[in-house]
Image (cartoon, rainbow, N blue to C red; front, side):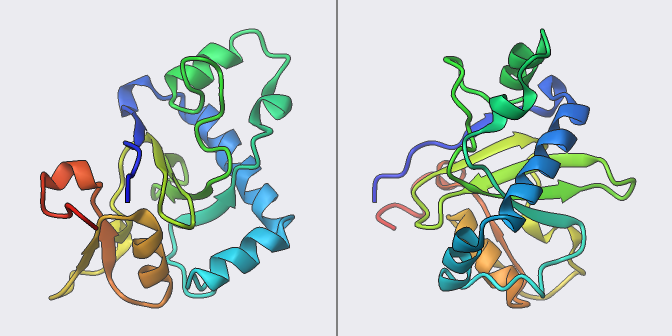
Length: 172
């Protein structure tokens, strides 16, 4: 499978208040989209067991419609990893996972296509097992969607993007 390289914004460029607004928007959008929830369930993601400290959302591509009217918002969104250089929403069409810090602020947002073909990150890259207790075994997957499905079923898992493993996941 030819996987596109994940889009990542480094944490020093991120506007945390904007990330929080976007995470709330994505979460609200997810609750209004039973079709997306059904697709997630077909992909093996069980929501009742999802870890504390993470919230799920869905980016329907309407981010700028919700944020427009603020003079600097487009540049801030671009610098925070929410828009591409040409103004397109990075997470459009992706299921999102927001990682929350103990104080409740947003550490980062990760997004994934349910078929595993695309991923995106904004904020701090947070391995999904960050809130899990120390375990003897951890499943490492090259696709975020696989890690999310495993974690939602109580399996300690994390994802590491393919490019971070050199050739280890070649051909998968």
